[in-house]
Image 1: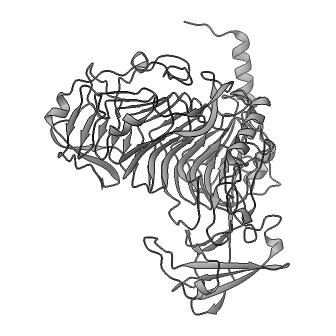
Image 2: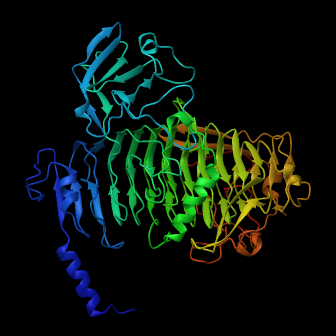
Image 3: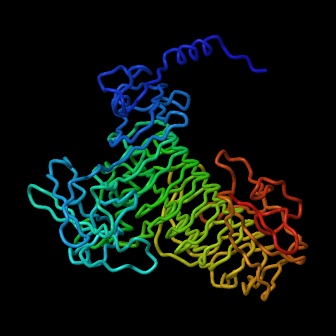
Length: 616
């Protein structure tokens, strides 16, 4: 048994004694001392004085403020913790309640607000813009109007509020609003239909964010147990500072857990880059089109590499067990600031469902530079793309995620060189995988929809293993992928004949018209067999129904490991864990030990006929 030194015990004891717990309550005052009997009124008052090791406990109520942590912790055990009081409902909102609505015409009401009400950031003057943001033929503001927690649809013409038209497949789209401003006041018009806004809960976005440090390097923060909502967040492309309802702003070691995060105009959680290396917010007149976006982003990456972008500076965050929904751009996004992070067990849904604008950054999880990340056990549905890893994904594992009913791909890997391991996932949307990368291993997945891949002339960086130290650049010639022990039930891998680099494909199952790779050995193809994959919800639990066949079960597959997968051709790296140890995919979706000749697909225990398996 290892003995603990006396000095270490003394230091730990000093830490325990010196740590404080501050309390915040709606019945408190910021002139209080934050003790249980004398709590602060605002979370910010506690944030202003909290030191490493301290805990800030917030009691029930709605806190309409932007929490700006002025300092962080110094290590994983000396962090500053923000938490809701146990069993209490604590909300942080970027909105304000608005009364004094006056009926304008019919069901349309009007409110007049002095611009001073908003301070330096007026969401009803701020136009959403940025690289790869496409507004269509109109402007969009960062503001929103909410009726009983449901956001209304912005119109750019007052006539469309007076006479709204319901949009197909968009619930509530007949509830519309319009804004205009002059030098002194902002005017908002909203069609509430049968509701009287002075008798209902009507709120408008006022703050850009709810929990976000103004300074970078605010490390080792924990945020847990809050309902965080209704922020006038700006568009968050990879070339700008990314501000979400909650964000880390180029810091290290945050834990964001057990929160409910909703109603962000753009992004929910951001693990993004700093402003100093470049903040190209774009000109609305450009309509989102960057003349040379690849060059612009490449220059930013080079600036960060030369300034010391590494694991000691940024990343290593944990984002887990959150519910994230109703965000106009992304549930979780991050450019360069999410390296070495874990995103796990989050429920992400209703992302970009209003479809009032578009762009190249919409997804449940959208990460640039996913280096040594773990993206695991997330449920993502009713989003544009589910998981989108763009530029420089290397050493990352995407496993045991459940993706369904997404509008575009469940997984999009764009201009990466790997290694990226994708295993034990359920990709159940009509479009399963889009692979514009090399050096990826797909192992034990179910893919119910389309599979597409291709080449790219864009060149992106390659790094040393488990590092941000650049070793070179390369384009995407196509290939150098591995497919072992997957089930394809929509489209298969027959088009892999066209790639330039070798591929390794073995032991897959092709059903319902899916076709195998011509050089594949030891596979099952049953063109007319429909596994009838369905999801069914019962009493708040989610089940997958999948029909299997004896020939599928009898297929003898290889146990997948680092030795089998080998090295990637461009990045010249092994598929291994973030600490450099070998990978062995010897456990299934539920952690059940696999046999030496494992089943294809994510589930080791499956029988002929209909299988009903609880997945949430």
